Image 1 (cartoon, rainbow, N blue to C red):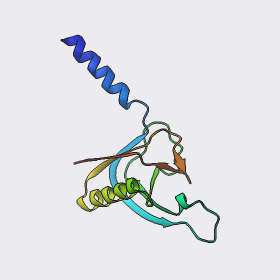
Image 2 (tube, rainbow, N blue to C red):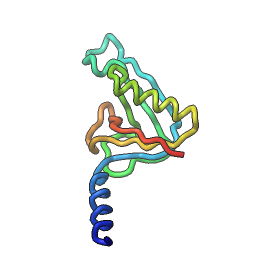
Image 3 (cartoon, rainbow, N blue to C red):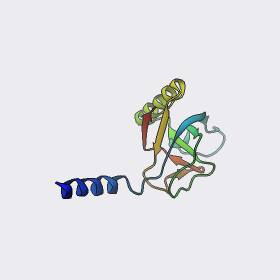
Length: 117
């Protein structure tokens, strides 16, 4: 039985190993519209940025511990709604990236959002 529990814990910890993440309360939310005069791809047009009251753990290409998501996808809009709800409720969030190099404009791309007390 001890072997099964030990193997389960090792397996579970290996699944989360390597993800860049940050846990804290949201201190700043910015909605960004890329200037129309500047050359940009449609994907970069509408983004939101988030700051937490903590620092990113693990390796990160982010500058100033910033995170972002896209507002022109269903997943991005769901992430933005979750962030707004957490901010208004005063809940802690954990933001998680796919990898430590998932950056655009010095901000980590949000992959997952977890809510906690």
